[in-house]
Length: 171
Image (cartoon, rainbow, N blue to C red; front, side, top):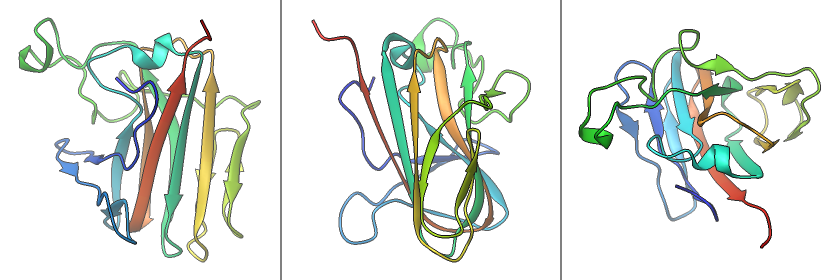
């Protein structure tokens, strides 16, 4: 669960869900992602519905100048595991490929702020240019999905950092 926020999220590989552990301190924070691979940054915990219970969720992803990738937001309403938490039977893994249960969330009215020359956003899809450092901010309000993630399809790898923050209604 992440109300408040989490910085330097680990990335999951698309084939087995093995985490690429993020460097948490020093000048080069984040995950080093390899060439020609797909990775996922979870927005929240796979066992909770925290993303759905928040009025506003925000994910920032930043990358080194060399990174060439396409970044999309995806959502899923099914749990990662059946009853029993992480020791239960697998249901829909965090690293499952898109399409079957993980659905791209790419509305034409989305506003995703992007920095860095040559880096672009179209709806909720970000393309990194591979020439300049950059970052993108996905602010998602009123999201009903149980789970969400950023999918990063990498052509040319490098250092990528993802941080999330969420807040509920004021009491």
